[in-house]
Length: 147
Length: 132
Image 1 (cartoon, each protein chain N blue to C red):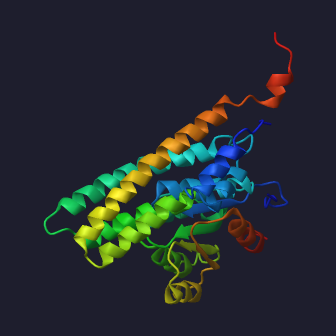
Image 2: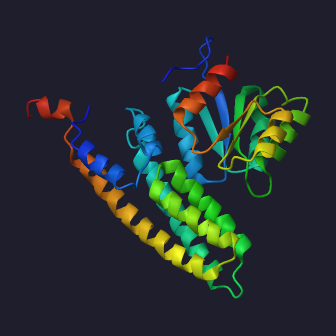
């Protein structure tokens, strides 16, 4: 079992509103048979979301923009964010989607900047978080005498 | 999390269908933590291919609603229209709370309609009821 130094850090992430309850529920699923489940899912999320954001970029550059296609990408991006518990990103996507449904290009462009920013910040925070977890020494290894 | 493996020693096999790699990983992880054997596929088409091969083995299908080419609703219909597959319980997942969509799925024979994000407690509840 691990000595968790991370509850404070995790708490600060939650307080800043980046992560919601879903993230902690996924952490609860981790056990010996799937010790890195959350990190694996988060890795998938950043792979998927980076691709979606590149697609969104392209859709916004089209003249005129294809709002229908844009909405599909946003639906997927918001969904993935929600599934991993990235609450803040999910909310930014929801705002973006509203502008999209109004076919408000300027609103979309502004929103997309926010989403990109959130995405970058979230990636950094989660990378730091998983790095911290890897540095934590398991109790059984710590108490075993060296050989 | 309580096990829902059946008494004769075999693990129950659940087929999860979702075009999102993230959601597939999440639902598979949740199901596996309930000691279920999971096969996760990315489309209704692949689901039907697998069901054609392993129908006797699949105890439950859990599928996303919105998928390109074949929606979860269309998959549900195909399963319920098939004499070989119709007994397999189907659960639909969706990120959107659309009442007439939910009604349509339940009327077509879905066991339950779960709103995303899927929580372990949702799956636990459904599996306990459906996988007796």
